[in-house]
Amino acid sequence: MAKLKLKNKKKNKIIKDIKKTKKRKKKDDSNNPNNIAIFKLTKVDFNRVKDPLKLREFILFFATPKLLRDEETQKEFSKRIGVGEDTLSNWKQLDGFWDEVALLRKKMFKAKSTEVLSGLFLKARLGNAKEVELYWKIVEGWSDKVRIEDETPETLLEKTERESIKKALNNWENNVRK
Image (cartoon, rainbow, N blue to C red; front, top):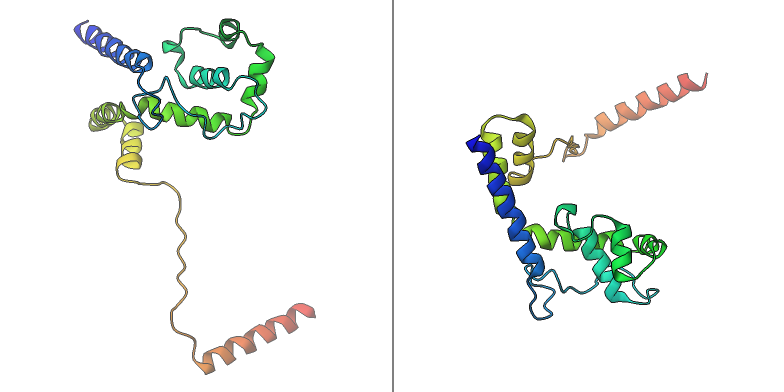
């Protein structure tokens, strides 16, 4: 029971920290990772949009986890900012929209990376295979992909070896043609 209360306290603290960060407003400094309320559109093509500020707000809406949003749904959001749902759907199709969402999401949560990695480390120490694998991928750069390396010899073949291979290839070609 005490563990559950502790987990809830930690969860509530994280939510509270993120909400504080979300509400914090500073000068228009889009490079400041703590300043997520004001950011410049750098990836999305907003030339066809009547009100880029509303588009920016919509990107912020999508970058924010549902748990932290003022509105739960896109429909509620569209009513609040006075833009039709169809328009919002069209905005999601704009070149660079999802890149902009990902960039903002990364800025929002970058400050929490150390805490997340710490939690991952604690889970990995307990031996949970998924957490161990993820830890090695993030921290140590491990990859489960197969690497193919060129093992071509650095030296050229001797003249006799090349002639022998050439002769074998000619014999093989002649046999295949028959």
